[in-house]
Length: 60
Image (cartoon, rainbow, N blue to C red; front, top):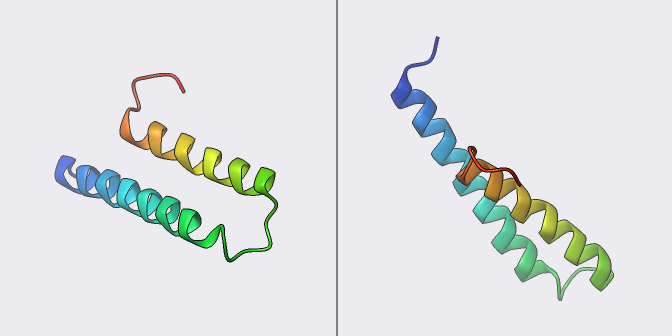
């Protein structure tokens, strides 16, 4: 079983990975072949994942 420190580290790693994915997606929107609607949908999904990983007790 994982210790509380290991779980906290895993949560922080998840949040950082999602934040990195969001910022990369934002930076790549202009260079990609995505439609504005597809880019917005992808960013919305990443933002929802980040919100869930950041505040797990709240409904999203």
